[in-house]
Image (cartoon, rainbow, N blue to C red; front, side, top):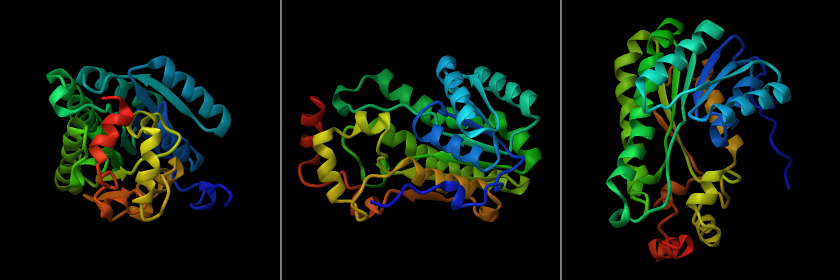
Length: 281
């Protein structure tokens, strides 16, 4: 088995030196990995979550293990006032914002006929409205720094995914928002792009959204024949935040081993019934 890839040997260690990144959902999973990667490449980071205890613990851990600076703030991305306060604290702490990672998200498996009105609305509010709220709050600072926004999306809506009507709708909106903001904010020097990960191993998302007895069939349908790893998303995030992507804006980058080419790889025979059974829905 090949040794794990050291991201500091993929990009220059000082690629993001002097930059400040504001990251929602940075206390765990993919976005925590992105925060770590940005720090390893010289950026100062601010990680935001509703759970201040979680992000404080994560910030202390990353500062200890990686070095550099990581600052934790509390914010519910659905609440513009919360977001404005968190952004103000970040700017007070580090003087500005150069990179925004919109990664806060909500998701769970549920058949559409059993989904409550509130459940659908809540996921839209976190994923889509939250992405807009944080982008708008950071806009004045990104305009000043001619910064970069990276929205964490998904491939759920490319071909349709069973039991994911709420998240699919939200991420489709995020992709459209990425394009719209890229058009409107490009003249200010702000780049806006998206990353659409496939299922990533060793995250809470994979545990909740792909039942264990479903994963083997999923992997068979992925051209690269494996699940993704957090470092796969880290690499794309570092690239998009760097000057290497200086003329890239309005694009959504799929990072899923080619699974979207096979119909999302969720769509092998009897996928809906298999997911329902595996998830006990």
